[in-house]
Image (cartoon, rainbow, N blue to C red; front, side, top):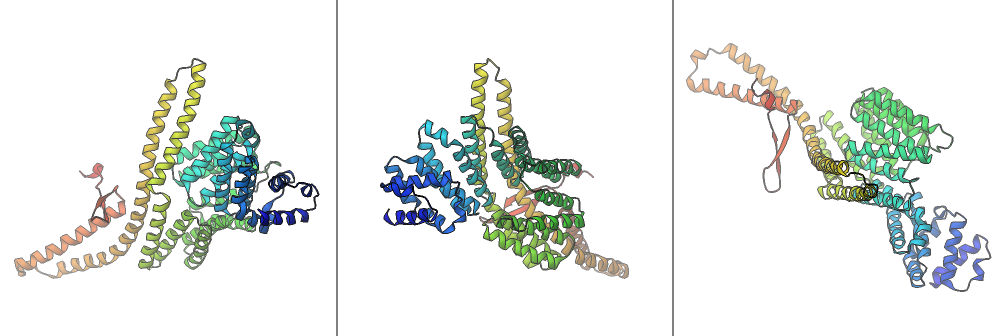
Length: 507
């Protein structure tokens, strides 16, 4: 560790302290340095060169700590690097070093664990946020559930609201709105009890967003206003800008696009210097969507490409897919159907990666495992208090049924979304020439005396007329968006099957 200790020695002297120099053992010297970092609340991301140096040598230093039975110092070292990486928006290193930290934490004895419990909780939370920003929802879920379990084990509910909010965001992106609502409600309740007004504001705002998605704009605005009230608290420490952003999204859903544009621009002006790369991608994406609805296609296309570039830098697959979807819509509106198909196909591939069946299964498995363990603990409490368990068992069964249904709906929804986008384009492009053919056919029928035609020529005309009617029937099916099924066309390709609505078959 000679090079490492020389670097530490140099940095330590730069920060002016004499205590370090009195320690002769290098391992103890480094441990004292780590303790000094924490005691003085040193923010390592303000010293990027030294942070990079620590990250490069953390493995060797941690091994030395373990060898000298100083695992606690190993935990603190990796946690501090992970925390600093989180604040520096280095999501991959946040996950990497916090994972090492919690692995060490789990190997410590109970007494030492309790002293480090809060930091371990934050380690799980930082990893969850980072994994979520990379669209790795299964990994994010695992970290949030581990954080919640740790809080329950040590009786610390103050920070549970952060993990509940994180789970709410995951289920929201998975379009499982009941589960998202449930977690945001829990976040609101625990934040209220612990006085965390910033977390409460975020949770209330997201509940408003769910009502907006469900079309209840009155209820949506009600929760947005409650969120704004929470930000006015002097202890909130949070800006109202993100709420303006989501009110803009609500106006988009109401097709009040000029109002939406005004709120999006207000949000962006308030936060442009503070946004992360991923947040910039989201802001640009929303602005591009509004420009698209206003038919300002040139502005929309320019800003959506900017959003896509930010999303690529942030390695956020979810936002990349959304940007490609909107670019596809622009090109379809401008008649560039080859590009529209290309971008829609890119969006589908990205969506398939984010919402793959394996990932969905793992998320559901994690949820079931966590809820199962939580119910077991509750059941033990009920048993000790001689309380009947019938109600708990019924809720568990309902939870399993809801999870199975939600999983299937997510997979089907992503498929249908791509098919319907192409169906709308096909209906628009085919219907116009079909109307020309049908009009000319009517003119021919008026001019030709069928009695003077041979049976063969009459049959030709009848075949043309039947084909026109058949194409019209197919377009009507596309337009009405009947339930869609998928069947195998070849070993590598699926074909869409549009079922007739049984309710109207007899009409």
